[in-house]
Length: 499
Image (cartoon, rainbow, N blue to C red):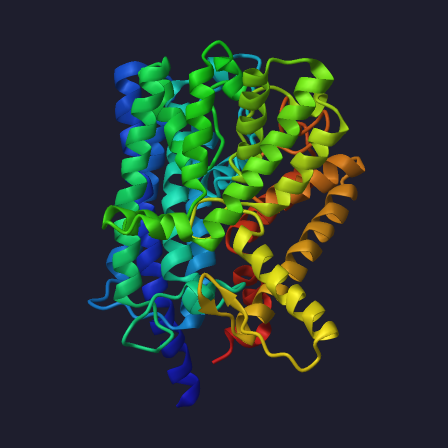
């Protein structure tokens, strides 16, 4: 009898997961349809690929949603973990259909392989910004818009997970940002859902403002939209191979990009509070102040290097340093020139910023500023204990007490993060990549940054020449980094699937 009950129980637990994935696929199909409609009006190349992709995605997604429809969705932590990972894999898989079906836009470019299509789709949804596509200047507008939409959808998905899911799953210290609720269970509560909806409105507003700003600064309407989506999502896909170097003659575009990348890497919950009149919470937030401090110090240091080493005008040095360093720190991946030619010091700063990332509750990846601040607090406490053995000082972050659980969770995440980068470095090295390409490729994938360093995957190159095993490995690394590593690792534990 128990053997018959258990499969039914497992099916019941799987049903809400499949239902939500079905809804996600329907949203993805709607975005494909929108892309096809835009293509019909401005550039019909590739429209048929998006029509067929939308049909297939809607058919499967609709079937999953109808077959598993439930009047109420309550997720246990086990289900939330599985949903978080499986939904991103499913979205990336179906998001790759247009890349597979679209006709080559020049005779020089062959159709994309499955690995390359999946890589491009995963890079878009995780807002990594690494690309295998070349000659973007000649690409159909449908393809360019689809890449931007993937990053736009991925960006809002990241915020929702960071606000409504990860704090309740106690992943990597994210429980520090758990929203107050009268219900102390581990279910994903309506309260965080409401906050996620409010942040989605802010996200949409910032994207619209960014597009308008780009348009007024000199971008075409299409470029303004296609760059606003990756800017606010800190994604980094551009419509040009040269990225933002394409707009070298319009410095204002670079400054606007810098500003909106910074906004995209800040906690969106604070923007909601600012909209409600609580402006000082953004100014006084410990994480935001630390983030701005890092940006300011890095920009001034590199700008000074460019002035004294290359005799650039101060305004030009500040613009190039600010844009490129903010792009790396926020894990956006845009480039305004090849910063690897600036010398050893700027490249060292870029490598360091690749690991840091933006703020929690934003679209940025990386280790996150708050974790480094918590590690600093824990380290300072240990040093103080060496001097004052019996002193008891409260550990605080943003005027909130830091529990042992939060500190342990952050330290574990930090150790796993570095271990994961090392592991993927070894995997990429086994694919016959040089050490610099392997290490920065692993770091940029796990951190969801975009370009690495070196001549192959640096800001002036791309990932198209990497061997297929490396492409699959980097796709996995992007997914793991975006979902805070532990969310994926927990699925590998046999006991997770029992019961």
